[in-house]
Amino acid sequence: MLVKTYFERLYPHIRTAVYYPSRKNSGIFVMLCFCAAGSNHFPFTKGKRYTSEDVPLQRKLYDGSRTMTADIKSSFHPFNKDGLSAFYNENIEDSKIRDVMLAFGIPPITEDKKDCLCRALAIQFKAFVESNTEEADDIVVMEYQKLLTEPQDKEVEAYHPASVLYPGDQVYLKSQFRPTYQVNIYDKFNHTWEFENAGTQVWRGRKLFFSNHDAVRPRASANYIDIPDTPPHKGVKITVDMDARGFEGKSECKWIMVDCDDNDCFPNSNTFTFVVSTKFEYQK
Image (tube, rainbow, N blue to C red; front, top):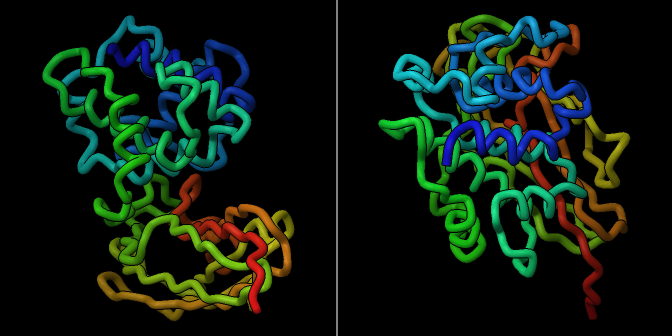
């Protein structure tokens, strides 16, 4: 498969296409993919409104008129598989999962599982980066089937978000990335984050914020949790109490690290997100 084919199959079904609906703005999608996957080849500025004129090389990568050179491939250091998976998880609408599966040849009778699909897509892109040619084997179907049958926690990688608000800032997630809690609808439980300041910035006045608390049913004991002042190379462990609140369904609880002015320190990442899947279980 060519990189061009990969992007063309994926782009029409991704949320970025809603923000930048013109086909010529597909270069913006390519840039965001690169950033999420750990590349510094295309610097991304938070808050900037990009146009197609800002991303000429990215558009050429999309349409195949330029290829991923050795210089471009070396900009992924290391390749952030979790970051790209999280980007796809956030930007592929749930209603589009089946469309993406079909676009990559996954049989229509196959179970649809978004986390596995997003990870398989990230593994495919990693194959392009590691290939010595312009092509890579088409492995999405194979990797998807493998992820459906094998526990994903066999391959737990430290997660480093690609986009940062402050130069030199970085977080190293030691706890599980995007865990899913299977709980009864009346359960109360807790979630613990364990992470480290892996950058050069001293964290002062930072908090974890439950950014979509008004859009999901689970409730937290507090929507803001203070992060102690943390110098580089020091770790943090924070626990929050959660309440399923008698609602049956699946909720993505999106937490973000914010500064003292409520700015997201690691934009476009799911570093601190976890999933709550609730169902009624009769208890005697």
